[in-house]
Image (tube, rainbow, N blue to C red):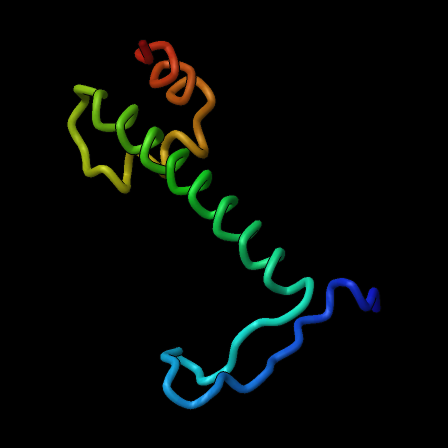
Length: 84
C-alpha cells in the first residue's frame, strides 16, 4: 500500500468540534480537499442532467425518463439535442 495515500486519524484537541472526534493529518488533508472538488463537480453535472431531462415535454416521471435515457440511445440523443 502506498504510504502517501494512508489516512491518518489523529484525535482532535479538546474544545474543537468534529462529527467523529478525529481529524485528518498529512496527505489525507489534501486528499480530502481533492475529494470535495470532485464531489462539487459531480454535483454540477448531476444538476445539468436533471435540467436537460426536465426540458423534455413527453409524459412520464423524472425517474422514468432518467432510466429510459440510460437504456435508450435514441431517447438520450433526443434529450441532448434539446440542450442550448
